[in-house]
Image (tube, rainbow, N blue to C red):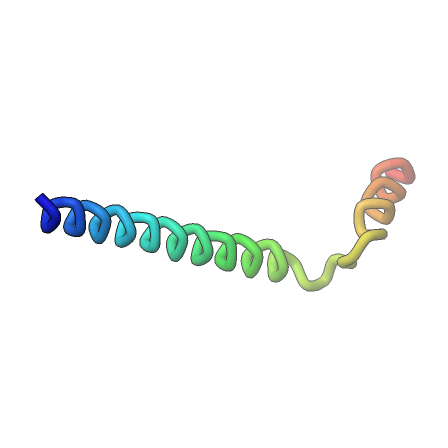
Length: 58
């Protein structure tokens, strides 16, 4: 009975670790993709204001 419990615990820990690694990998991939989307555009907290000004000016 004890070996089944340990095997189940090991399997669950492996699945949890795989999900954590996959989540981190996806987060890094999304962050890199967002950071390098268009390097000619301004970045930072004021970037959306410049876009709004462009839309207003036409």
